[in-house]
Image (cartoon, rainbow, N blue to C red):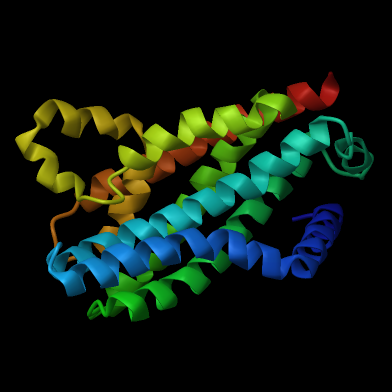
Length: 255
């Protein structure tokens, strides 16, 4: 990592630190409210079984981290390439255009990790889910967190370089709504075997691999996707979106 990239990263971290309270509200309020209702209130009322909370926790964590990394990259990019033209200042730095894009992805990864550190313990305490993590599970949690954050930060770069400022809310709605409901955040992929066509169709959704990866790490005793498919999907989508995102970023920067 070059000195120029570190300087850009330091600048973004300082800006994020000044807006930390807004960031924490954005990443925590929705998953925690969802956790409170579906993980605490409904099991107390007997509407859903207590075991559902163990199934739900990995999905909530996956949603929080992936959406945080995606938004951390996509939304600033739309503004930078839109009316503010702030991206021009960054492109004057003694670093390649691809280097500027990679720095954006790193910022998205860092924000996702912070979101995970905030959401996981709070959701766990709210749900009362029993987690018995072995060292291998902790290692898998770290690996899945990094890969999922990378994947959706790169995906955010693709979205941020394609969407126009006036279309970004529509793009997020059209993309995120089906991605969330078909992303196995609220149900395990392995149990979809009774609907084979649906089980294989959702494999095109990158959120599936993040949700199942956290399920593999946090609740390995419950049904989940095979580890080779989880890591293969996370790594494959990460490389693909990074390649596409950097190409789109360079093209927009040179326009």
